[in-house]
Image (cartoon, rainbow, N blue to C red; front, top):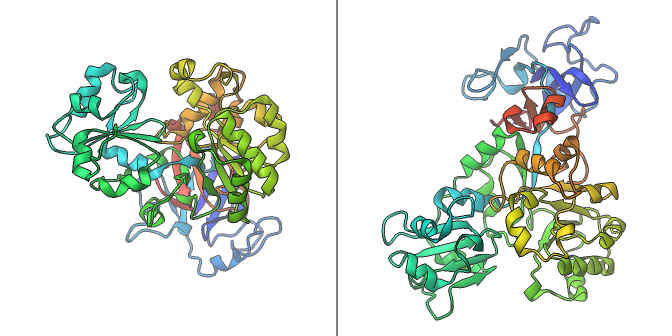
Length: 471
């Protein structure tokens, strides 16, 4: 594929050639396949300073003259369908738009996001008060399971099985808290699953056990992949703490590149204050998984402190990261830097959840929530994940929130974009469009300057994974 007339950061207006899934050439007015390069040499002959990818020349041996000039979206030569030109024969006019590395969502829960197609949204932005909440639980036919997600106590207070029984007694109901950590089941659900042995129906971090007691849920993974591609997302890091058997195969229908924590590096370590290990015990766990890096879930001050003490004892390795970094006291920033950790955070949460944090969060912690600017200024690598479905699935909305924060942690638009441009397994290491890199790309309608003015997904024209369009 030859993408003409695009803006590549640091290079200006250029053409970009892709072969074998990689960027193999960047320059002005590149020759089409089979044409002379203007020096009497057909394209495919090595030119100093142009081809640096091993094996790139070999991809040109069976070149055929001509190329398909095309737009996108069902036009011959782009989708790679039957009877169409193979991608390496396609020529695309970029119309002066920016060509960026594809966005990578560094922390997301893909199966849960895909299950939203079969779920009822009951968050504060979806329903107001008990009456609307109760009505939402009664959607569908009596006797059918209801899977409600996104709940927060501001909707109808603390839940238990008996409250749910009062609102929806004629069907099995399970409600997930928006943190993803808590499920509350009503009595009908407990009976249907054979779990009615007393108790209040509240299950804390028991997804793995509960999974076998509920009917299958339709997962709209195709829709997840399609919507993400339309936003320029070419990769995901799935951050489930205990990936179930077959999860990687299940997610393989997505067109994006995947990192599945626990299957691929890093290994996710889940911490909860109620079952918090000692620093020594956590250090022993870290040592057992070495040489693989770890990604430690830290959403409270004490979880962060235990993690830092444990990594001090076990010793850090390249790729170790803090997930969320919800509360990072200023006195720990130098410590994080000394250990060489990357922080993968959600800078949009203080914006999305501002009302809840104003009442639910300890006043001593509020100045330290989801840091961005102070970490970056200290030289600590920072990246972002949407944490969808527990936050917005739109990385551009995350960027806008990161820029618009009024708590001293706002960052510049280019830095916000960079939160999603890190390497999949080393999110603090920036990717660029250069010769030799994987052709996981995001093509925009407009130059970078205009993109940074709006940080909107509407500027995305196409996404490519290994040189193939996925939008």
